[in-house]
Structures are given as structure tokens and as C-alpha cells.
Length: 239
Image 1 (spheres, one colour):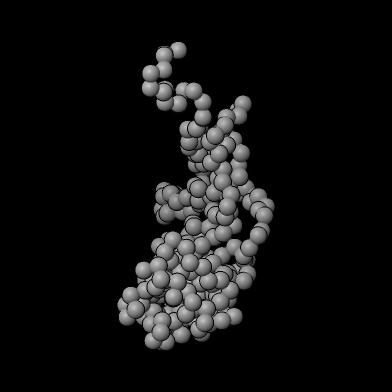
Image 2: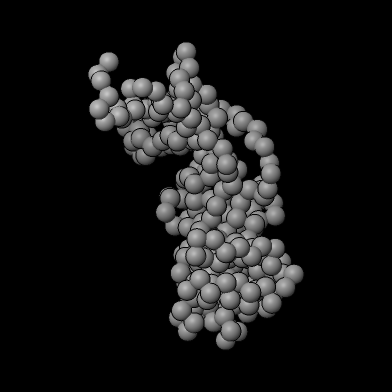
């Protein structure tokens, strides 16, 4: 199996050359990266070339890398006022309605789209990743003309991440309602949302208003490495 995966990676490198900006074998899987401009030609060849024959799109998802490699959940030591996430607001998700988003170190493009492909003919799987070039307005081409099953997947990524798929013939929300504000899977989307709904008896209709719920953050237990957690050696006297 390992040899087959390595062979696939080598075939991809030979078949696409400079069009691949990344080609990685990890955890028994091959992941390639392509630019937005080369996405359609690469996907078309992946489907139609008998050497690859990735005739099925299994899944498509968006990714927000704005907080990649960062964490609030430091639980190895305590502070005088609390623990890590319970004290320091280092996550966009903890913001409340109206808060300004903190600046984040930008090491790479923020939004990416990941495609999971299956070749029934060759019994192989492949992951393809493409980064949107504009963080403010992420746009990538729609692959619905190559794999028709991408239709609802692209609508889901548009709804949850705000990624636009150029060429999609019916790009609209699929999981949230028509008046929903923002994109819930973005890292800067508050945990409690932007707005809430309630029925107004005076207007006799459902209305939106800013959220009134304060974010509640659960703090994990502190993990300490001291004598309380060491297993006593066999035959050692009790202290």
C-alpha cells in the first residue's frame, strides 16, 4: 500500500510538474496543492486521464487558517487569577457583538478549499488543496462542471466560510436562513453569534437583535506534574 501511495505522488509530480505548489505524502495519504489559476485544468486531468481516473468527488470543504498553530488551552500551569483561556482572550471566537477583532500574525493566505477525490478504477484517494488569493473576498472556481456532486458542497462552504465559487449557477445559503449575519465557521465568528431572534408581540413578527448572552468559556483542568500524580514505586514506604 505504501508503495502505491508513493507511486501516485511520483505520477502526480511527473504529470503536472510546476502546476503543483505542493506534493506531500503523510499518514498514508497524498495531498497536492495547486494555484487558483491551475485548479480547473488540474482537476479535469485528474478526472479524465486514465492514469489518475479520479471520477468521484467524495467531499469538499472550506478551511480558515487565520488561527492555525495558535492555542489558548495551556493547562500545564496556573496563574494568580485563572488559567489560560479563562483569562486571556486570544481567540476570535470569544468575541462579543461589537468587539473589534484582534490582529493576527499572517504567515499564509487565510482561506483554502480542500477536495477529497476517489478513483474507483485505480482504488486510490487524493486530497487537493487550493488557497483563495484574496482574504477579504475569497474566490475559487467552481468544479461543478467537472464533478456535479460539488454543487451542494460548494454551497455549504459558501454559507459557512463565505468562500465564493465562481461559475456556480446557484450559489446561495444552504444551512443558515436568508437573513443570517456572517459565516459561522470563520474563526472570527463569535461563539454566541452576531444576532438573536425573538418574537415581537407589538410588531407581530420575528425580529433580529444584537445578542444579549455573554460568552461562557469552560476552562479545562490544570495538568500538573508533581508527586500527587506519580505512581508509588513497588515496595516504597508510605510517607
